[in-house]
Length: 78
Image (cartoon, rainbow, N blue to C red; front, side, top):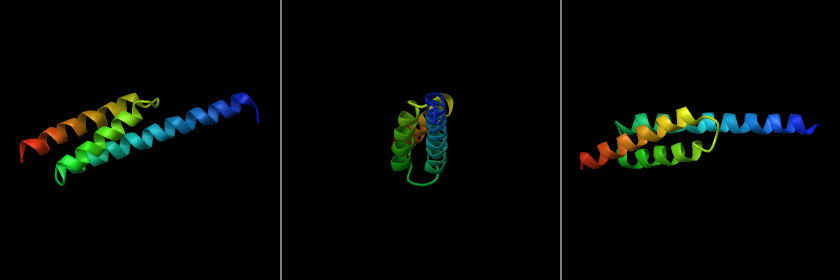
């Protein structure tokens, strides 16, 4: 396998991983509005921050923002 093919596979893995981390963070954030907002908000924030190191910055930024909103909402209803 050539170096170019290995780099291409590596970047697609990072792209796919960032996509999955972003979607999981987004789903946890949305579920957090209805159930366990503090814990799921924190999980969405952590996944959003981890995902910002991948090429999928927009999706992970949205997951991070929703996580912050859910965490604030969870603290406000206490």
